[in-house]
Amino acid sequence: MPREIISTDQAPAAIGAYSQAVKVGDTVYLSGQIPLDPATMQMVEGGMEIQIRRVFDNLAAVACAAGGSLADTVKLHVFLIDLGHFALLNQVMAEYFKEPYPARAAIGVAALPRGAQIEMDAVLVLGVPV
Image 1 (cartoon, rainbow, N blue to C red):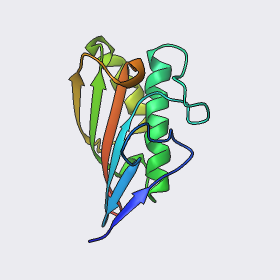
Image 2: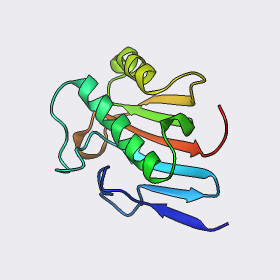
Image 3: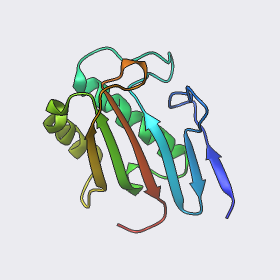
């Protein structure tokens, strides 16, 4: 099955040797997104809620470029510097996703690229009725 590389200027450009997403059949693998503003490639300013929303917005832009949306997410990985933000993550996530929610892992990590406090990646399956 051929691979399709997904790219959009509505999300931050890759800052390494990777693609924003790779589509194989109906499955789309979204690379990790940190709270970078796609227009400036700088970290967004503000509190954790603003950072979480920027990451979801970045993921949504890549999902859209792949022909889907966040509603097509089947698996979400969340990497947090401070797991004390877990409740806030859940609160904001409930605004971006509706039931049935995707499977998810939330992992505490020591550091993330560019000093980010949060990073997320996702797996989408397109065209499957919810």
